[in-house]
Length: 303
Image (cartoon, rainbow, N blue to C red; front, side, top):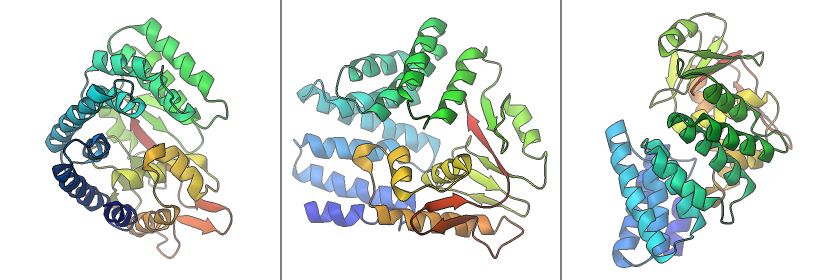
């Protein structure tokens, strides 16, 4: 069994993200069928279901199944850190903000890592804002900001502050190459995307993220878009280890050699959108990592 799991995990980055997730779901369903009382298999299957789905309806169904599995884990282990943390996020995703806060409030009293603690307070801040409790939203925002000691989450903090200090009129945030951050309505975003033919746009507001260049548009897998966003925002070399640390949860960290094929896929897709198709937009340097080395790109995200 361990060999099956190990072989599947090594495929991450080499397979299309949705195909890799489907293989993992099938594997853990088979394992759970043979070992129905295994809380470990239930938790692993729930993690995969929470990230899987080819359309919004299927995503919702998978999220509900994941919630059921994590709750089964909590029946046996009421203080399981991972289950509490993930249920907080899942309930936020299905817009049950009170439940989200309930599970996150329990999670913060367990052994959360610093990164997870930051994300717990950040998501609680958004949930309180959605419920109209501005005081608690600001309190949780301040807690999150205090945890960002090394300024690794400055972009997320800007985005969170923009959300909880506006009055619900806008739902999109645009990060420009010069560091400026602008809030916009959904209608205005489409106009902004066409502002400058010399710029590119990474749009992360839709179910399928996209990159729009001067020549064409490329559709990206969600993890590809997250890697690309991180590189564009950093504007300098980023190691494989840093990408893994900040874009994957600790217990889902892929093999370091899976980063290279992900970068290669992004480069292949993006080159079709750019005027200079001879150069890779993401370059690498031995001992330094990867760097966005192409056209100025603005990033559009959901608040």
